[in-house]
Image 1 (spheres, chains in turn cyan, brown, purple, red):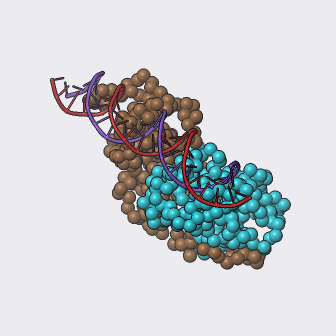
Image 2: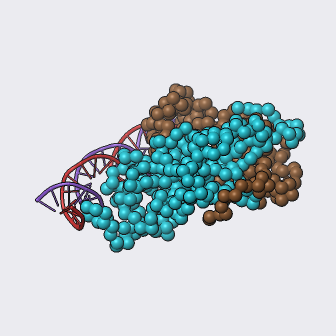
Length: 243
Length: 243
DNA sequence: ACAAAAGTGTTCCAGGTACACCCATGG
DNA sequence: CCATGGGTGTACCTGGAACACTTTTGT
């Protein structure tokens, strides 16, 4: 893909004109229903009016890309625990129909987030216009947002395998079943045997038993663990840890 | 990091104004000197005049981000074999001093590339202004380009471990020592024993022996191999393969 | 007493590590 | 004939997969 050379000075007019925004792929896990959820917003304006899309915003003066991503998030839900990182930038021509009308291109720096469902309260600002969708039931989205979502989903699964994002999304104390179930809903049933998952994680030593027990209906009460970030430090940039 | 809400309609003037460009981290491997190289460009204009920076350009009308990245590359070097992918977007306020003067922000969608040194001929267009630098001897760069470079370096090492980028950068036929040496220069001496590296790769079956031999001075001549992309297909999205 | 969920242990085996050793060529 | 680099083989062992089994609770 070799393109024209650029030896001659470039006229300002040949440069593309951009509007820059952030699109967020926000995941959460419904432990009760064993289901992975994505947050979607119903569009109220053209283009793609009355279609769902990812939460998004344009970047404001003096605001970093990450700040814009957090603002979009805070605008839709109130969360405490969460994990957020930049995903990918989509800025090719033709991805927004307004482009040809306004003569500007829309560049989206997409972000991916994982939030804790029980602490993520939907803001009452747009009732019915914001909703969690199970990942298998996501409809046709506006723009190229199905693409972006797919991209975020891949990243989420990869992240779970080698980094401790799960603990940003679990309560302060949790049982190993909670953790296992989180992995199961995201990665599918067959990623690992429970007992192997358990012993592998405990061996590392960055999960400490609080001594407390959690009794949930029938069955033996489970030990409650806490994630020890300091103890985890030594595992930074080491190869695969979970799964 | 919870920010102001956005319930009131946003005045156009509060939006940030962007210029969008691409910055390329272009790597190559000097097999003879056992050295990992980065392509740098000497700036001829302010700001940061007479400092090195990464090859970069602003995105033009109708041009995709990737096309812009390829164009920058083609402007500096003539290459056949290469690997290129998007890296990360840097768009926080204050990363370009022109920002406050012009009232626009510079967003860089950085890309990372690996090219074959013996086919990468520096264009004579800017003699002395473009040069390969060994990664350990990279000077202070303009803007946040040392950051971007660091980011690209991490990605390069990660990519080598689980994807076949090396073959985009090796000749059509190559010896296993060539391959091993490439890995050694990028990953360091201690990533794996040669004989184990060898047997692991051959076992997979996507390297086929051409029957030809390469004699380089003293020592037994080495078999020349070819990368079989079809045979590799079945290893797509499987866990770590190399190293 | 029995079902349900948590937790422990054991066996088996693939695959990685660390070497020692053989082979072919140039000088 | 020996130094040099290419190539093969093996013995050891870690760590994962699979699964059986025990413990502690609720009903």
